[in-house]
Structures are given as structure tokens and as C-alpha cells.
Length: 440
Image 1 (cartoon, rainbow, N blue to C red):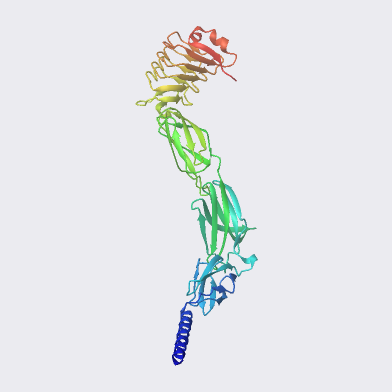
Image 2 (cartoon, one colour; image 1 turned 135 degrees about the vertical axis):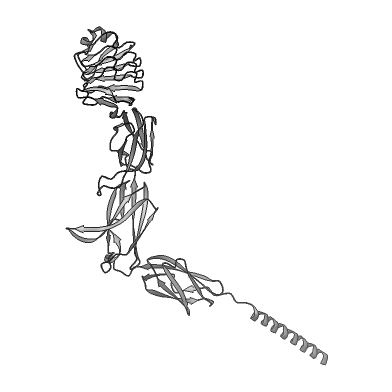
């Protein structure tokens, strides 16, 4: 019986020890972390002010990070998150604790300046044709009579910005932004008032301009250069010549007429040799415009005496398309004999062409006689390339004899309206080829 009591006591002790061990095991296990919670998940703070958000539950060891410290910063003070506003905008604060729990605060920083006193512009959007300019008034930017503004243009180079005085009724009235379109596309202009960190912005849409130039035709002498202004277009430009042996061209800064003239681009065309070339200008929007260039031989190749007789200066060479000077009334005998580089002649005020004047001008293809009345023997002998003669006199000029146009055949002779029969009645004209009347 005594043994039975010992056995019962032993079993009770073993049960007690087991229960105690189990209890110890439960007490030693780690408890689940508390969820990190905040008093608020979103706050609005006035510029340069601060706000407090209380941590309502968590696991201690708190830290806070700002996604954009340029907008707002934060610090932990006991169980509070202290938020300091830096600049207008939005950011997110992330609070974490010792157990890795996290919670977020959405922060909006607003200006503490009344709406009617905030930095702004008169127009929120501008639409400009490339190359055009427009002003946008700045509002509420002045501080103690001074301005401290900076600008960010995105993308860079799309427009240019300059600040200028706004004048109303002859008196200063703040500032304007002068916006000039430089490239087709959309630009965002950000403005910052560095005195109080206020910002504002506006949008500029730039549309393609038509490509236009000052003139579509121009004349130039050999070795000379002329300038054709590009009125409107879309930089950058490229330029090509259909005949670089006659004229070349390049685009560069144009010559300003005076200090009020705006900077602009121009095509500089150089005459190389007499003839005609087409200069083609192309812009960044693939728009094109053509300029017809007539290059004439330099007038200093001519000698005109007191009687109006024209001869070739000593040592000079007549090339390409030539026009007789206004003072010339007759071409001296043999004056341009064997001038094999002449391609066309405008006789201008000439009335008389002496013998052998153009004998052997083998490349001469066309002549225009506006006032010619007499053509001497062999004047155009051996001008085998001559195929077009244009006359502006109703009365046919006198041709000395059959040698005047020796070896010249198959010519088209253009004569004034109703003068065809008069020319056909003269054998020396009729035998040259076909006579046609000019259209009025």
C-alpha cells in the first residue's frame, strides 16, 4: 500500500513537471508583430509650414523616408512623424518600424500665397507657326521692384525665351515673356520665382511654317554673289544647285538691313559661268522651293565708245549668256569674232550689227534683237549652233547678203504678231527656217 502511494506521488510529480515545461515553452515563443498604423494616410501642408502625423500602433524603432525631398522632408519625434513642406507639389513618405512593418503618407504641398497673388502667366497655352514670336505676360512675379526668375524649356531648343518690359500707355507694367518658335513640336515652359520658390508653367505648340523666300528668280553676273532671304521655313535647311558649273549656293546667316532687322537665314548664290541654274531649298519638314538663277557674263568685258559702238575689251572673254550694255547701239566689225563660249545674246538697244561681228561663235544658240535694223555680211557666219532668233521689230531688219548667216540653217525665227508675211517676203529671212509669230 505504501508502494502504491509512492507510485501515485511519482506520477503526479511527472505530470506537474510536464505541465511546467509546456508552460515554459509557450512563454518562450515569439509573439506576432503589431501592424504599423498611422493617424492619417494623407495630409496637405502649406508651403514652408509643417504638420504632425501620430503613429497609432507599431513596433518601435521608427524611421521615415521622403520620395522627393525637394517637395517635403520628414523626421521621427517620439511616436510622431513631423513633416516639413519645401516646395509646391506632391510626394510620398514611407514610415517603417523595427519589425519591417511599413505605412505610407501622401503629402501635398500647397502655396501659402492667396490665389490672386500666386506666380502665373496670362496664357496657359500658345500655338505658334515655326519662326513666329508671341508674348505671354508674367503675373505676380515682382518682389521689391526686382525679378528673380529662371526657366526650364523641355525639350531644349524647341523655343527661345526672353524677358522684356511690358509697356502700357507709355508706362512700365510688369514683364512679358517673348516666346519664339524654333522647332516643330510641343514644348513645356517651367518658370520659377527664386525669391519665394513659386513655380508655374505653360505649353507651346509649334506648327510647321510654309517655306518662302524673297524671290523665285534672280540674275547675277559671273564671279558675283547675291543674297536671297528666307522669309519663313523650318530650320535646318539644305540647298542644292541643278548646275554647279553655272551657280553654287549655301545657307548661312543673312545680312541684317539695320539694327531693327531680325536675325534670319539667307541663301547666298554665286555665279560661276553664264547660263541658267535652279537652286532648290529644302527645310526640316521636307518642304521645298526653287529659285531660277540666270548668270550673265560680266559687263566689264564690253567697251562702248562715244558713238555707241560695242567691242570686246582687250584680254576679256565673252562667255555664256551676254547682254549688250544699254549704251551700245551698234556692234563693231569683228568685235566678237570666234567668241566660241557665247551661248546667247540679248542685243538690247543695238540697231546695227557690223560685218563678221560674231563670225565663228560656234556655241551661239539664241539671239534676241529688240531694235536691230541692219545686219552686215558674215555677221553670223559659221554660227552653226544658232537655232532661235527672236525679233521685236515689225519691219524686218535688212540682211546684207547671203553670207550674213553662212552655214546657219533650221532656225526658228520668232517675229511680232501680224509680221510673219513681211518676213516671209524677204528671201534671206525665209531661207533660215521656220518663221513663227510671237504670242501677245
